[in-house]
Image (cartoon, rainbow, N blue to C red; front, side, top):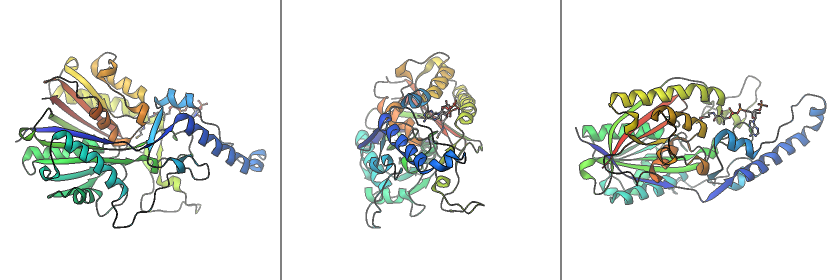
Length: 373
Ligand code: COA
């Protein structure tokens, strides 16, 4: 068995930002437009007018201040309300491959490695731009990596499940190293016309290089252990993927292809699931809460993270112990905990312990315990 280490990470951040103020202005313009169109139906009591969104609610309910997106114009146009992404020719790199490539190059550079040092690529994300050929194989080709590549999807837990898959293969010796990449274009699956959730997501791509620890050339994080768990729930759903079916009333609507959630239930059910998952993982590794120097949690909701941090450490974590990037990036699905890890891990001292934990649809929970080296 080989010891596995994370030797590099990288983050691709889109160039376009949407602040809460811009988002709310666009949503409210859309609501006013619909209400004007439905004026007669509203007067007849047949249509419930759309309510305005508010910046205060968004920040208070989620902790989000802004989000990065791949296309701002379409999202903020009340006539469109979704990203307008250019159709690329078959000979051009796909948009996800391009985003992941940028993050992967940064991860390789941080590790002091080249594509020749990589044996496998796992593209793990909530949404993949196509089913085949795998986005991971396209990234493999763009980087000129030998070996193999495959895609996987475990919603918001895709990155940690991908890290477990890569770490297990490296530990067992079938590969020496793997790039786990997470291109998340959440703006494509978010319903920007839905007041209850229009503020939740943003776009990003992250990459994590895992290698045999003996191959590390600089500071790295040993993967002490990983743990994944799933439990079926309908509370976060994407109803129609490629099977675009009409409803009994014959209506086809893009809403059925997008993210839906029962936010309150998610909140209530996921918190105990995650807290217990982390507690069990730490207990099995004989790690006391006082020994855990950093938590890089999934970035969906600040209140949720504050609750989990407090449960795990047995006290309110100091800001540096449980860094949030949510205020800047919003929920970027599987990439969130990796952004936090990538941006807030350099200062840890040799021997310090930290934990990456993701959670989300499925339900799914993935945790990775790391030791700085
Ligand atoms: N602007 C203003 N008010 C809004 C609003 C908006 N954009 N969206 C909802 N509201 C209102 C609601 O109408 C409701 O009003 P009421 O009390 O008069 O009925 C009130 O705010 C509370 O709405 P609710 O949906 O219950 O808010 P919440 O406090 O539960 O927060 C979430 C909503 C989604 C932020 C929260 O439930 C959450 O984060 N859940 C977990 C999400 C998660 O992690 N999902 C995983 C995704 S991968």
